[in-house]
Figure 1 (cartoon, helix red, strand yellow):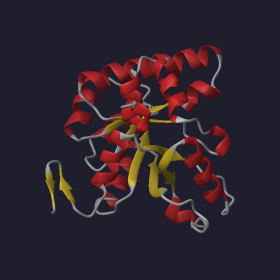
Figure 2: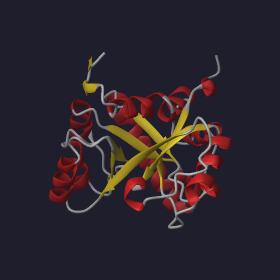
Figure 3: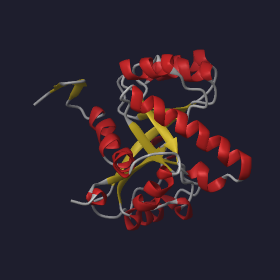
Figure 4: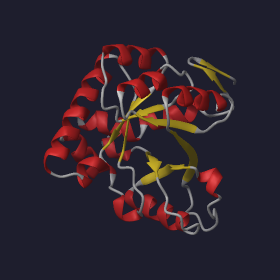
Amino acid sequence: MSLFNAKFYEIMVHLPDDKNSLSGFASAAKDFGYSGMAVIDLKRNRFDLNNMPDDFSLYNAVEISGKPSKIRDEIKKYKDIPDILIVEGVNEEIARAAVESERLDIMMQPVKFNNVLGQIASDNSVAIGFNAGSIIRMRGEAREKELRIMRTNLMYARKYGLRMVMTCQPSSPFDLRAPREMAALGSLFGMSPKEATDAMSKFPLEILHRKSPEYIQEGIEIV
């Protein structure tokens, strides 16, 4: 069975301000081979949910930023709300505050990851995110630096058995890449084809499953 027969999800979509852009974005994502996508601030921005493609799922994601103390407080506010919570790991202090918060779902592209953060992320079931779109958009030394960060993060993700998710963080349909293309980008920083496909299918689905009303905690589910 091909690795690319799975259901794929784009986990971090930034929609433009145009309220009518959602249906076109979703249709393009479906054409690229995705079964759904998580959109930053989908609820707050009240995008038009009409004319959506059939058999395509939408999820609300929240990107939390700010000082470490603010990040902790903001994550606590979402304790009983089924949104996907994402923090960009722009520095080690923010990454530490984020992974110490059990409710966080994804630590995206931390620039300073280490054994301590890897163990805490594992204990709190925090996934590590890889922004493959940065490889496309960056050039020269900036791209090389980004690839080094991603190789390091991949090493710690493997060591601590972390869930991995991969996104291209699209902000227009033209930014989207098909799952096969994403897997090829993943290979540039060392991801195997299975790791790449799991990062777009298996692990996003596990995160979405945790948001279901039946989920209580790891290993416990209402049936």
